[in-house]
Amino acid sequence: MTLRGPMTVLAIDQGTTSTKALLVSDAGVVPLASRTHRQSYLRAGWVEHDPAELLADIRACLDMAPPGIAAIGLTHQGESCLAWDAATAEPLTPVIVWQDDRTRDRTDALRRDGAESLTLARAGLPLDPYFSASKLGWIMTHVPQAAALHRAGRLRLGTTDAWFRQVLTGRCATDAASASRTSLMGLAGRGWDADLCALFGVPLDALPPIGPSAGDLGTVRVQGRAVPLTACIVDQQAALYGHGARVPGQAKITFGTGAFALALCGTSPPPAGGGVLPTLAWDIAGQPPAYALEGGVATAAAAVNWAQGLGLLNDLAAISDPGGDSGGDSGGDSGGSTGGSTGDGSSGHPAIARGLAFVPALTGLACPHWDRDARGAWFGLSLDTSRRDMMRAVLEGVAFRMAEVIAAMAAVAPLTDPVRIDGGMSANRPFCQFLADTLARPLAVSGQPELTALGVAQMAAAALGVTLAPPLDSRMVAPRAQPPAWAARFAAARQAVQIYGAAG
Image (cartoon, rainbow, N blue to C red; front, top):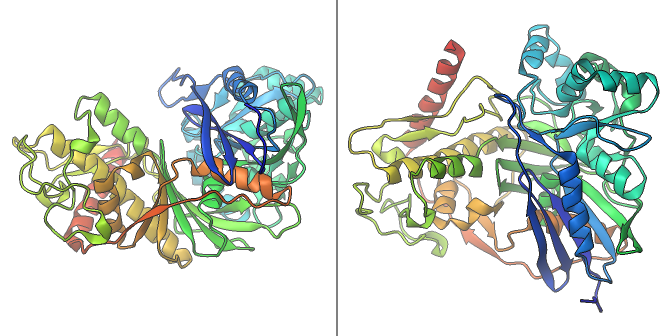
């Protein structure tokens, strides 16, 4: 097809499990392609992607683009990183994924040495393998070719966006929002910090230049035509922009592999500490930088998929309303509550009300605890516990963990209501109601499932002086009163997995 009329932007969302292409215009967001890629787990705690496979998926998305697209916006995984030859763009390593835990001993040792005070003061980030810095330092220590290329002045180290941009546009660069996820950038000055680079053993001269998130980022060949790349940014920041957040205090939660909350804070860095992360929301050419607070639950949909893989429940819609008969239908969002029995021995009441809790610490606890030793667990199992009870507890556990994140963020900077949510789990009405109850905040559930693509497309269009405003709808969910004992019970379970992990 050939596009005519209003501007259309090609949005490419390169995510943890797939790469998607979507066409975004004032008429709406139209899916174009979706390609899944392999997840490699060579050792316990190691998570890798094949960079050639990711690039091939991006190229396939470009090949499917119709004539007439005005610009391209690209999102990426954030903390996932690699090394490559600056002269040939040939990768030296697999992509080390944000979930990867191989550098845990190194970050633990740095913390014991008191180095976390430096990372918090300069980058605003705690010491954790989640961020790119220790991964890039690991490459310098364990990949001999990296050191050899550095001596030859040909080494590049960075997050995946910088490599994608070099291959696709011929320009090697990253943006300040992406750089803020490495723990190598000074948050206030938005430049690479020599002391942080030295701390992690990352040569500063091997890092890509830092530029804007949107503006003139080069051109990409699409079916023989040069199309401008005008936005490239972390996926979570793109989703915040897609939700329309422009005023401090506005917050969103995206439920994907993990669940990530971002809240806009203004044009200066919010304070570090309290377990939440100050970060760059975006840095658009010609505008002041926008800062945000970030906090995540490492396993959200990943926990649900894991539980389904155990055979607990194949149809999440079959779970009756976790709110049960504890409250009325607020905001028209009862989720099809049946009340009473679900037919397999479980009542319509929440699992937590019956003493059953699940802590989704399957890869440890991220914000605000940053405890890699913690592990997932069910508490309160009994002979009458059903598979459906256990599955409901998994959903409730994600909600309780996100409530910890939002509370920690609100303690640093005030949040406005409603909290906007998107992602796969937001399609589950009972989960959304339980989340609203647990947060004690109203939710605006997006009717647009691709907020990441929408956000980067809007950013790409804005760089060309055009406002993209496709029709969006959202469903409001009002919170219902939740007994304080439920949160206390979950907190006790969460503390127990931390004690158990520490004992190992």
